[in-house]
Structures are given as structure tokens and as C-alpha cells.
Image (cartoon, rainbow, N blue to C red):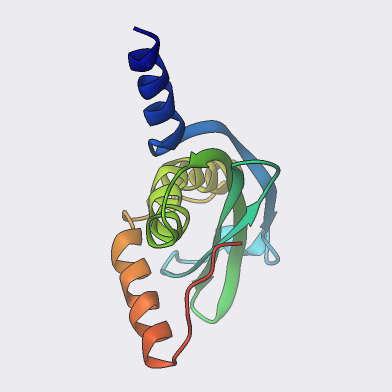
Length: 161
């Protein structure tokens, strides 16, 4: 019986583990440089979206992943508003090989964070009295695969920090 318990405990110690510990806003900003004049103009917006992810190893098997979404909306040639959110999460990730860890931090975690960041930006923009900003879903798996191809072409190796 003891051998079975030791084997089960040993398998649990080496089995891959993933759990979300916390999701939070790390940084948030909103600027409407042409207010209130922008509200009196015909509204014909163009939206620019930049997104970025970064990760940092914390103590033990904990990792922080930060997804940054920066939106610049112009009305004609004038900037109507700039909104940015850094949506972060702390994840417990254990017993993954390097490739799986890189994919988890580079695609899986940002997929979890994106809906929170999108909602935060939408709320921020509507509080600025602009129309709702409904960002389309982002395929982080495809973006991760593109980045891997770029790195392989450049002779770089993905690293987990």
C-alpha cells in the first residue's frame, strides 16, 4: 500500500500543473487630447491597435504574464483618444518542458488575459464618452507560431524568463 501511495505522490510531483492565481490591471491610461472639440465633429474613426506580451519568472514556479493593449483612435487626422491597459496575471506552472512552457507563457496565458483587457478598454473608452470599442478576438496561438518562425529564420532560440 505504501509503495502505491509513494508512486501516486511521485507522479503528482512530476505531472504538469497549471493554475491561475490572480488577474489584475497593472497599468491603465486614457487620454482624449482634443476634448471637448472632438465631440462636435462628424465621427469617422480609424482604430490602431498594438499588442504586446511579456513574462517574468517569479519565486518558485510562479510566473507573471502581462498583456499590453494600446489603442489609438483618430477622427480624420486628429487623435480622438489613446487608451492603454496592461492586463496581468500570476500563474502557477510546473513540470513543463521548455517548448510547452514557452507556448503556455506566450500564447495560452495571453488568451486567458485578453477578454479581461478587452472589457477594461471598452469600459474606459465609454467612460470617456466615446462609442464602445469592441475589439475582435485575437488568435495568440497563431501570433506565437509566427514569432517562432521569425525566430527560427533569424537563428534565435525562444527563452523562458
